Image (tube, rainbow, N blue to C red; front, side, top):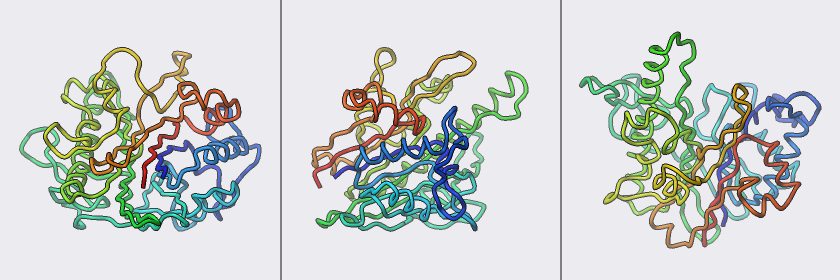
Length: 341
């Protein structure tokens, strides 16, 4: 069984309010890519991926006029995908939802949030992800209130063979210092936002530990916008959010070989799941931002990970159609794990 995560840039722009696909010549939001071109590329990528379940990051918007589920199921029907049933958790106001697209012939799935609901004052521990988390961000002995702009999606999944899985889809992001003036203000706001990002990872880790201590089959997957060596503030805080979520030695841990490889190196070749063009430097930057982390119990199911990188993966590179589709579809590439379930 194949479980994947895929951040689709500007996916929301490809649908009308009624969920109809906008396969036309208007610009998609991606640089120099038309909406029809991006949709065709996404159809090629999703078809090649052929996953039983895909956690989609930056899924189409959910609001009073638009439906994430309606849009994704229309997309799946158009491209005749096995994963044709959509599920969303808590919606957000960023136009970038977290949703699960899965094969209903092989899986049953529903949104199953854990933790207590909180008011604006928040709570410590592991409150529900659409609530607020109290954590001392700056060690002044006064807890701050932390929230998710994109609450993680918690899905309870049962396979056709009766295996139960917990999937937690995430999109954790440290906001850029918009509006900051001068180097000192940029640094101050960047550090503050980085603290909030790490607090979100601590909150997520608390939920992860609950499931691991319960010996559950857990997969945490999505876009963390974080990783070892990603920014200059890592030395200041001592560790990345990825290290927090994976867990420390001696504690119940999650496993992702790409993350462990990156954590063990500071120089040399690194895996990458995203590719961005830096206009001011006229070059591309690659980064490892997307992960599929599995529990120790699932390590017994012979997991095989894969980053569908158009240049680093030999099969993706050898197919010119798939290679070009991956480049046109998004600035991120799918990451998958195959498990013997």
